[in-house]
Length: 397
Image (cartoon, rainbow, N blue to C red; front, side, top):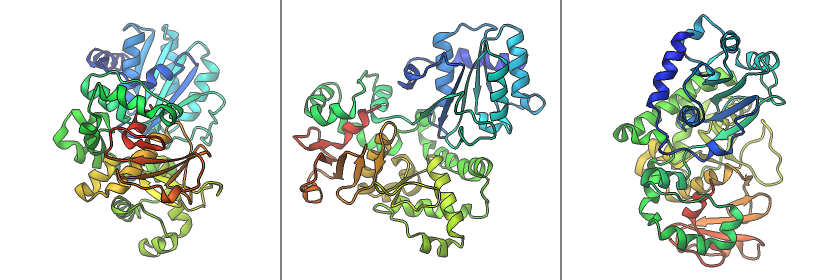
């Protein structure tokens, strides 16, 4: 265990707290068992280490360890927790628990047996807390972590302190919000940069290698995490990669499951299993119509990539601008709101608000006569009335 402390100490001393994600203040860190799920590369490890540095001194009461450390080849998570607690440990932070085979059962045992120990764990967005071998849903407080919002990207990149705004504030006060924001930054100057490489925090580490590293993230999810955590066959992975290219180039992609199954050579059930896994892994976003009811054997009405960075990584400048607008909107809203498809407009939010997404000249024909309906326009700084700038929905978290 001394080796784990040495590795933790080195990480603790290196981590910077100059910019900290807003989620850090929203998590109930004092709960006995806290889980943080998120897609690969969105910054879960950084968040853990920053929280530790902000709230703990480097001593024997706190320990960070990654579950993919070779130490766990010969030791268990439960063993670590037990020995740590015996020597005065109070706060145990476990990273990447999905890489440890019996993670859910051992976390349950730690929760039940070591009542003075606080445990925080992170894992893939594919983690099924409710349906895991040991149901942790009644024990763990679980949070989902996204990549940077447009607001966080501006604050991180430019050293700003732009505040988070609510959807209701945007709908009622978007002109005033735009005036206050544009006094601090010309948002359109940076919006395309965000669409291309602003979602993943690791962009600044090696900017020239960003897309190749993002491709590695996608490959790791497809080839390792989905087979490991969803028990699906790997034989169709090359075909699934082709599907991602199709989605990236589409306007947006409306799936015909029968034709897809015929083209790829898989059954409908297997295809829908892959689509569900891609959605849960935050590689794609499956959009369903309002009132249709969602289950594992229902096809999505539209398919998007999860975020615009993935589109640019896959097809570069061939990424469709209209699809990028809709992808950005859905990605920024889905974090705290219910996003559905609708016949009138592009999206229905929270079973109430209808949004039609388009360029600066987008008209109101599609939402004529629809209550609580708004036009969301790209390439404008300010909106008027029911017309709202697209960039502003990047201020939601």
